[in-house]
Image (tube, rainbow, N blue to C red; front, side, top):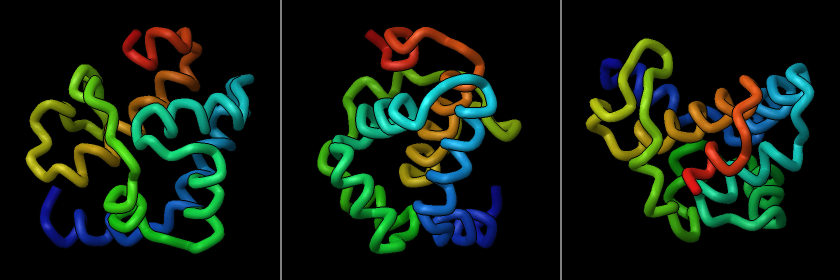
Length: 119
């Protein structure tokens, strides 16, 4: 992904991405609470913190910059998202965004929560 595309993605509002994640999960018979669980696992936010990020309209760059504690096991998230291998993404912010995408994808595909959360 070129720098211009990356900058555009970083500017997406977390609220818009979050609502798309919930829609995707619910179409596959998963819940908003499960989406919140995987995002909280990745970022260290609690549910109130997630809601605050939505209410404030923060973009993805701010969302991740303010994340209380990125999970140390996030590097165990492997695979391809948007045609790019996660392990090969060099920009840390883009990698964290794609980790979040991958977690929600796994949720929507019916993967058990303990596997999604790398337990």
